[in-house]
Image (cartoon, rainbow, N blue to C red; front, side):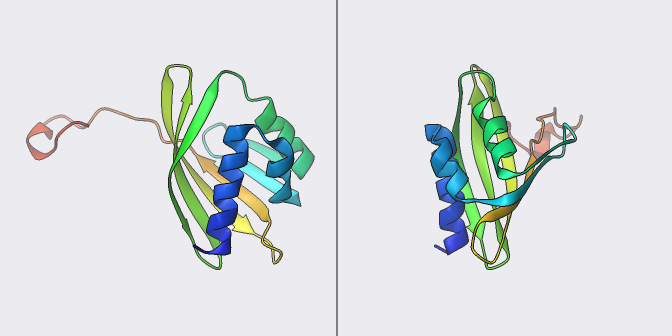
Length: 124
């Protein structure tokens, strides 16, 4: 496992554990967090930790997969808030010290398969 993959794993483990000090350890001071769907941006480590720590509801996450190389990484996860289930995709960029400088979150929405395709697929 690359150092970046391990850092991504630490990021999500600290997030699920609500270990905000542990989360801050893997973040660069000038971190930028962007969310495609909501068009929100958070700048800086303290603002990001506060944003995550104040996320409402009884939420939990389980990491599905982490892929990383020397340039960055991506993770997919299952995220639940109460009875709502979502799949999240997060892209990570790192500085030369291995801290996270850019997080880009994508939360794809499920949708119904196109009409006339039932004979080609099965529903999961």
